[in-house]
Length: 326
Image: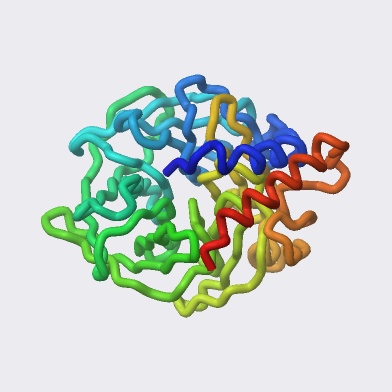
């Protein structure tokens, strides 16, 4: 869901000055740029295990039932998948890959602030061959036990396959748990769980399912999963601006954070909490919403002169207006 450009403009300027360029090459784990001119509002991102180095994405609303397979080494689209067997998508906001290479797409946005009586999730098998094709999907009707709401974050646990949604509220949302198995024949009621202290625009599980990250426009958080009794650990930095996607690399060593727009960059940074198993631990994020080290900005790349200082001041006053409601 979009925010007024006048409000985000100063933050976008700071992000443009501060964030290092995405580096194409390799398998995309160092970041890349989405180069397909059709992808102007990349609003979800999922790393493929079946096709290493491939990242699935989609546009926000007003595009159609399409998924795009982007090669992380070039940023180019190598396959477009058209979903069949579903109605007209309304506001597609998230994508996640569960066990057995099943893709879940969250048509869960509500630009009217929580007025739709239900939203949808689509499930389909990840194609074994990367080519333009039509794939039949299963459509699930989703409701919330405490009423309609806007959401942009959908997570599928990589071991259990259970689907979770985090609603989008400026003062923080909640983790909603779906049924153990989704039903295509009736409504699937998602039940409210623990609080998530962020204005969330996307979230993703680590490949081992032991932790998850949540991102927003101005910062992010990571949590230990702890069997569903989640524990907040620390902040993570994010590129500032209209950022609405995050995924782990398939080895769990990095997270990738995407942005909206034409030629949108996907930034890479070390996964919070360190790599899975006995891999080296990454430094934890600092106290700031865009902390360096764990964040999407690097002190060595900050070359903000007088123009940057003005942008920082403008962003500060913009954020004060945004959060003054407390």
